[in-house]
Image 1 (cartoon, rainbow over the protein chains, first blue to last red):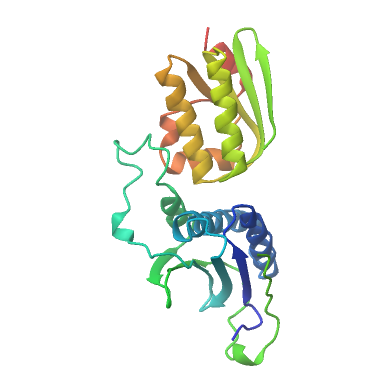
Image 2 (image 1 turned 60 degrees about the vertical axis):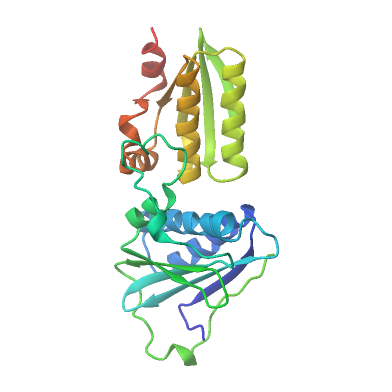
Length: 160
Length: 112
C-alpha cells in the first residue's frame, strides 16, 4: 500500500505522456528534497525508461498502460516503471560504445539510465510485461517510514 | 520543437530550441535536416544554445543527421552546447565523433 513518500501514476502508451510523468516525478523528487542537478539526471533516466516501456514494451498499443511508482527504500529513491508488453531480454543489449555501434542511431537508452542512476534492475511483470527498477541514493531525502502502511499521501492519476 | 533556419553566406544555421526528445521533436529535427540537405545545403550548423533536454532518441537523431550529411558529401557541425547536453554526448563518446564548437562564429569559420 502506498505510503507518505510513495507516488503512483498510470499513463497510456503515448509519447506525449512522458511529459506528464516528468512533471509528477520532478515534483515528487523536489518534495523529497532532491537537489536540482540530481533531479535533472534522474528525470532523464525516467524519461528513457518510460519511452522504452511505451515504444518497445507496449509497442505504442493504446490499450496498454505504463505504471510508474516512486518511493523511498533504505535511503534510496526507487522508481519502478512497468509495461504490459511481451517481455525483454537484457542479454540482447549491445554496447553503444563499441566502435561498430558508435554511429548507430539507437541503443543508448539503457546505457544512459545506468549512467544516471546507481542501479538498474529488470524483472518480469506478473501477468506479462517488464518491470524496470531504478535506484539512486540521494543526500537530504527523508528517512523511509518504518510503517508506511499506516500513512496517507499517495498520488494517483490516470490520464489515459 | 521550434526550429529557426537562417543563412550566413553559404552556411545554413538551424537554431534548435527546447527538448530534442522521442516523438514529435525528433521527427521535426529529422524532417528539417533532410529538407535543407535536399535543398542542396552542404554546410550546416546546428545551434544548440537553447536546447534544454535531449534523450537517447534525440541523440540518435543527431547521429542520423550527421551520417546522412556525410553520405551526401555535406557536413553538419554542432555549436553552443549547454553543459548538460555536452555531458550527454560525452558519456556515449559522441563528442569525439561530432564536430563541436564553442560558438556559432567558430563553427561557421571552420568551413572556410
